[in-house]
Structure formats: structure tokens, C-alpha cells
Image 1 (cartoon, rainbow, N blue to C red):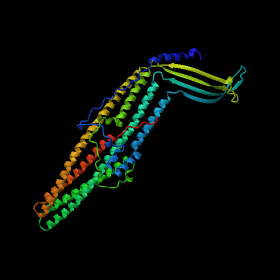
Image 2: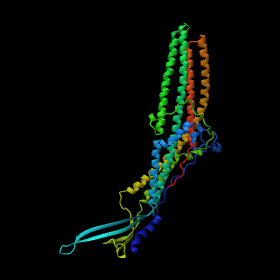
Image 3: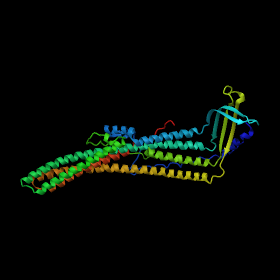
Image 4: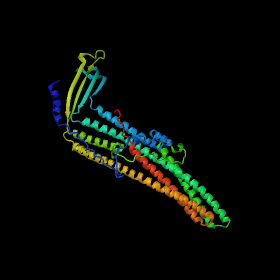
Length: 466
């Protein structure tokens, strides 16, 4: 190769000392020593470690089956999985851009032209076999930063999938708890209706005997119809929750049936002490951090555009009139070359691209910090809700027992004729409200426990082959 052909390559190598310095995100802020939701925090002991399938701690086979169907049928998860595949393809494409490209070709052309002065035309045939290679030397790290950005985006898509899966699992668990609560309320109202029907019959008999006034009968009928109306509302709520679960599983509501039941799952053991570092394993925080890394890699890509591109090229092949002796020394042709190219005037586009990349990196940093703040807020909220739901449940249970005992006494007094049915009606309403509040408190406690277990059982996506 002539020395003059190497001049662009030599110039590029001399400029390599001016390579772009990669930009790195700021260091992660250390987590606080503790949450406000507890006086003392430490790492969770191995004996209370939460499995990745955290919902199994509720020991409900129906919920376990629904969670298995969720991973298979949920369409939001399917879309997120497709995004992971797309990000993986982008990463592999950026990795392949670092290496030389090679292409081969074969062709045949036949042409005619006017030859000598007498106007006779000559016809010629040209056959060729060629191989071409090209390689962009990544002196300034533009391609390397592109690989880093694509890798971080791939990690972010994996974390997004894991976060969406966790969210869908928690939503499904909450819908399931709400459905079982509705069924328990339905059973409660059916028992209440039966009791109200007996009370109405008793009142009618006493009215027929001239013991009570007609107002007692009307009050008893009003009490019965109110309970029947509430039962209709609860049945509709249960059906809607079943439809919501079907949609989460990727099934048509009309083709999904959940066997009825009236028992809520038992509260699983939840660790009393949680580490403040548990948020480090949250996929949503990992996704925000990965996007921050990708944004800072884009700064390096934008800055590298200020430097010239260096390309090496080579080609070799054969060209001749006949295929029979095409591959021979007289038909051999080849070329080697190097080129350096840099724009001189672009109207400030490269500088604007660099400014935009830095602004995007600052936005990604702010989004990451906000994701951390939101995560701590959620855990604090869940801790308070879980603690208060336990206290509320104990109070509601005591209130329910008192209301039940009061109803028994008032009914006995009514049969003895010492009180009017207005007292019975008030006692029945109080008992119904107390048991309904008790069921709602149990549901809130189960939801709070599921959210805490979700945070403990969540896992970052494991490394996969890129």
C-alpha cells in the first residue's frame, strides 16, 4: 500500500489521544438506616425469608393456581416480554457494529458501444466475483458507548418486566382477597336475611295477637328489604371482581368461573423487622437506574460526533469476459483504503445533540431519585397500614362480639315485651355493620401483608445470555 494511502489512518491514530471521556452517573445515595414504621430494623433472619413466590405463604391453592395462569395469559406481561426481546436485538445489533463487515457478490454485464469510425458496434461481456470488507475504527468510543447504552436499556426492559410481573401478582392477590371478602359479606347478608325473616314472622304474629303495633311490622319489613338490597349489591360486586380477575389472566369474563367460597385466607407470618436495604432488590428501582446509565452513555455518543470517523475498506475479486477462466491471475483486482471524514458545518446540530443528551441524563437521574423516594414511601405506607390494620382488626372483633351479644339481649327483651322493635332494628343494624367492618378489616390486613411480602419477595431479573 502506498504511504500516501496510510496518511488518513496515521492522522486518526494521532488524534486518538483526544478520545471522549465516558460520562458516568453520580454515585447512588446510601439508603437511610431505618424506616419510620418501626423502632428497630435489621436484616431479615433466614427462618423468615420470603420466597420469590410470596403469595404461597397465604396457603390458598386457588390463589396459587391463579398466579400460575397469570404468568401465562396476562397480555401486559406478554407485551413487556416482547419489549425485552426487542431490546436484546438492539443490544446484539450494537455489539455487531464494532466488528468489520464482509460481503461477497457475483455479477455479469453485457454492453455494446460504437467502436471505430465506420460505425460498427462492439459487444463485450464482463463477469465478476468480488469480496468487500469495511470497518469503522472506534477511536472515540462512540460504538462502545452505544453498546453500553443498549445493554443498559436491555437491563431496564428486563427490570420493567419483573416490576410489571410483581405488580400484576399483587393486583391479582388484592382482587382475589376482595372477591373472597365479597363472598363472606354475601354469606353474612344471607344469614342476616334469614334472621330478619324470622324477626318479621315473629312481629307479624305478635301484631296479629294484638301485642305490638303495626309500626313494628313495617319496621321489620324495612329491615328485611334493606338487607336484601345490600345482598344484590354484593353479588354484583363479586361478579365484577371475577370479571377483573379473568381480564388479568387474559381470559374472556364469560368463559371464566371461579368456584365460590366464603373463607378468607389466613394471615401469613410477616417479619417484624425489615432491612431498609430491601429496596435495592426492587425491579422498578433497577429499571430507573439502568435508564440513567443508558442516558449517560448517550452523552458519550453525542460527544464522539465532534471527532472524525475513521473507516478502513478492502476489496478483492476477479473480473473477466469468460466464466471458464475468470479465477486467474490476469483477472485479479484488489484495493485497500482508509478514510477520515468529519463535518465542518452542521448548523450547531452536534452541539445541540450534546446538550440534549446531558439534559436527558439529568432527567433520568431525577427519575431514578424519584423512583427511590416513591419506593420508600410505599414501604412506609404499607408498614403503617399493616400495623394499624392489625390494631383495627382487634377493635372491630371486639365491637362485633359486643354487637352480637347486644342483639341477643334485645331480641330476648322484645320477646318478653319489654322493648319495641325499634330497639331490635337498631341492634340488628349494629350487628350487621360490625361484622361487615370486621370483614373489611381482615381484607385490609391481607392486602397490607401482600404488599409487604411483595417487596420482600421481589427479585431482580437474573443475568441472561445476551
